[in-house]
Image (cartoon, rainbow, N blue to C red):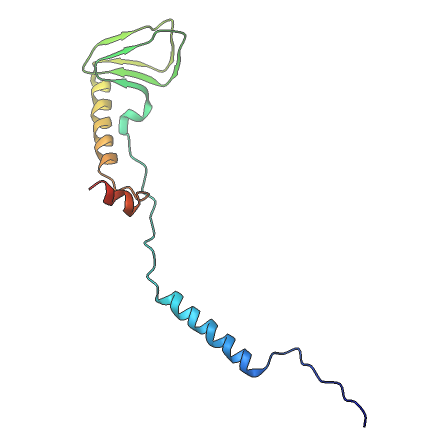
Length: 132
């Protein structure tokens, strides 16, 4: 009696293929049923208005004590003290208790209030609950 070699197929049996298909379908349904996480939209930058051109903007005084170089305008309002220039170098204009400095201070306050009032999307639920 001649020996016959078993025939092997590269395809898995039909029962295993059906099980894999059902498993893949079940995993897909579960993934679709899970609640989606909230997408976090990027917030627009805080607008600084006329304060944007200032490198230094103070309320009472601006004092330099050494060989400093400042690139941008310097302003103080409502104070009037601005000392140490020179030896410091300012690559911009000086505004001391004038309309430009007053407007820049006003715009800075508006920008601060805007930034402080924004939601922080990077704050986790655990952090926000702990701070209550």
